[in-house]
Image (tube, rainbow, N blue to C red; front, side):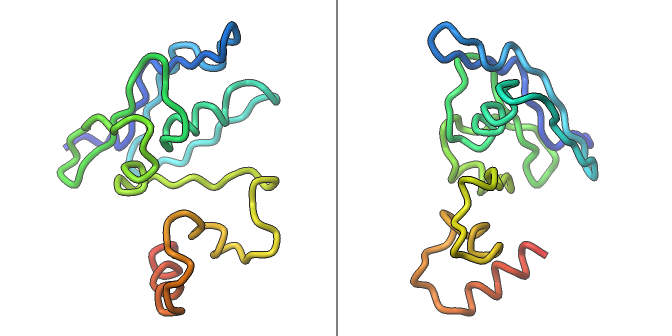
Length: 128
């Protein structure tokens, strides 16, 4: 079993003439913490939006390790598939709902709002 849990291979994204991501390769290994740093407009959020399925890449693929540790392609453009593979996205502060708790913001889009309080406790346990 490989210790690679996530691989981005050749990710390219253009917005008209602007190249936001140009053939990005990235690997994340089990237990590794990775930070993406760069100036505004460097393509960090675009890359994470592709990983999470908010954007479709123009080229490249995202591979995620399954339970057996085998890297498999993540269906592009599917936040549901990303969540199912254990990939979440915490948005920049200006996209958060200020009237909600941190837990509610994390749950936003992943849990129905009408679920009883027990679901919040289960979500908190999963997050912890």
